Length: 87
Image (cartoon, rainbow, N blue to C red; front, side, top):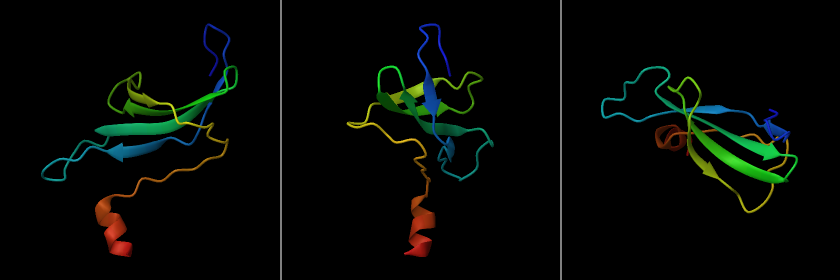
């Protein structure tokens, strides 16, 4: 991604996390897209949470970790139910 300030940001692997509902049902795009980005100009990393239903993927939260997240970092969302079925 190159913005109008000529900064270059690279994104990590995006991951979809569904919103929880009481009945467990939801639209296929009802949730969040989460990813890390790294701005090569400033050296800053951010963890982004975006609204998956938004056509522009509106940012819901942007969190700055205390250190740079390396390229190639992979993440995986596992629900409590999925985790408890393994352990």
